[in-house]
Length: 499
Ligand SMILES: *Cc1c(COP(=O)(O)O)cnc(C)c1O
Image 1 (cartoon, rainbow, N blue to C red):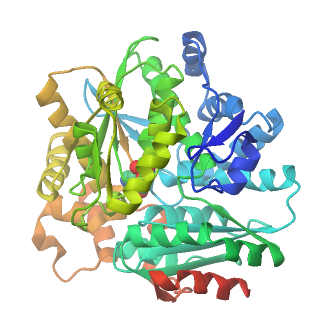
Image 2 (cartoon, rainbow, N blue to C red):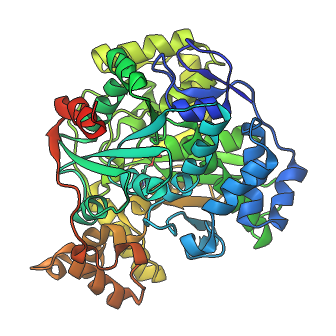
Image 3 (cartoon, rainbow, N blue to C red):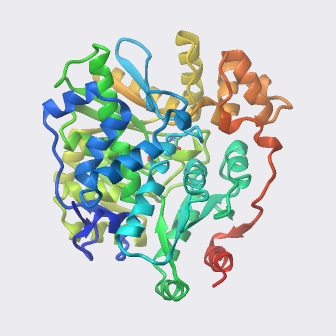
């Protein structure tokens, strides 16, 4: 498979090259040149496979420059029962007759980012070897909280790589921050940025496209790559679990091969839901993709009107991993829906950069409306949803998942559609425990307690075990203490690399 840039400045690199570069040199995102299609027989055959076997089968057509052995090696190193604490890796929880919750948070850092970031370092190390690269790879990450930890954990002590993570100093939960600043490993750095996620992301993008810095890096035998969801190597493993969920539903007798399902995804950077879109393009029978936003509802407005407008107040919410106003991966969707016409993409992305907004053509908006449905969940609604689901089912969901569940309820009320539905559950409730405890036990339960004490409260109330990755976080040594402004990020990188 060859990949091209959404901005049209680069054609036909192989997957190893696309994964190594992360972002295309023209500032665009890599997209596969051709469509991959699975027959219904193939999709049905996934029912007889375990998660790893499904992953190998689905990844193959996208990574044609990797041998079968190499793909197997990546998959079997990443998706172990030991790391994911569950034989299903991404198991379904049947909430009721119509709804299955796809639990994507059984990995080591308790959020769905592990599904991709446990395997990306394996893809990358092989990509480096394949492309004859001799420089050390420097992974730069901007994170709204969960990606950073998952990337640090995935890349720690991986030979030939270093990783630098930038997180909004005051925009992540205490648990998320402690996860990052206590990270162990000889090649890892995490840095707090004064500002929000968009500031951190823009800072990283500016570093990636800084030509003078690139020359300096090359001279010192370093090369940047990205572990953000703009890297194709992060997106492609996310396609797997949508097919896997479908196969599990066949096995559970809930659907027959060929039946359509709805997929609901709580969305921030548009990565996870884009993977569902690719699965649909590949032949997964999907009725609607439901895009769930929080109060930062720029995507809801876009899907409903065709106008993308980031000129609005940035809100800090209880689902912070979705607090994003510039959803990078939307660029890939638009490229697909314009049949790979980069002139549109360049125009819209320039308008976004200069005016903070763009309007897609009516025919493109029509395509979007036929595939996607979108709404958002307010803070109060999100908390109410956690409480209601716990009361009715004794099942505990985190704030991000609750956004998905609430928007799904709105979808059913608005459309009456009773198609069987999969809701992506993107984090363990322990990861955002303060809001979850507040929703279930009331505001008083938070009084004089920090997030670490609340882990115990939640565990006792709901008879759930605290995940290994979150236990005793407050007792670990803080190893990373740097905080900088977004304009200072480049200097910090140079300093850490000694260039
Ligand atoms: C990253 C994240 C999201 C948003 O996913 P995108 O791929 O950026 O849309 C939602 N929930 C949680 C818990 C996350 O960590």
